[in-house]
Length: 143
Image (cartoon, rainbow, N blue to C red; front, side, top):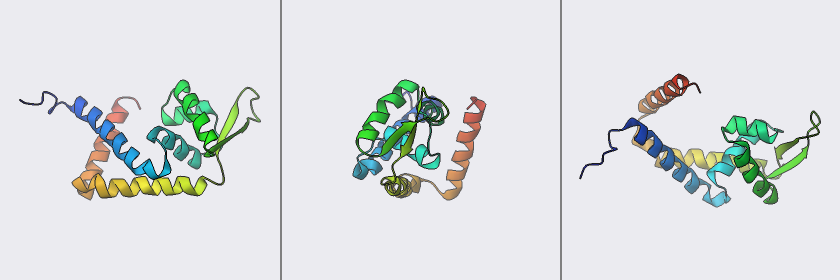
């Protein structure tokens, strides 16, 4: 029987998203992080001191999802919170000094995992073409 979705661009993009998440999860196992947690940590490592709303905007996550993920990362010692000096109604989230090196190591682990297990299916040129096409599609869709 033929796979009815084999030639569907939409289905293949969706499925690649699922598989990329699974590969990211594998790379993050030693750090005991989910891809969703890791995404927040990476953004905070690059833009220290953000409100949960700003973090949601940067990661394309809704407020509820960010609010659900943050307490676990604070409890595990990855993040700390502090009052927002510009707005007493909100707070800022930061990666703890202790965990900053580990966030960098996790980024390297994900990069290395993808280089060894995912991108070996394509040449450097094919990777560049794919990235260009994906960016073109994102732009077309208003991202």
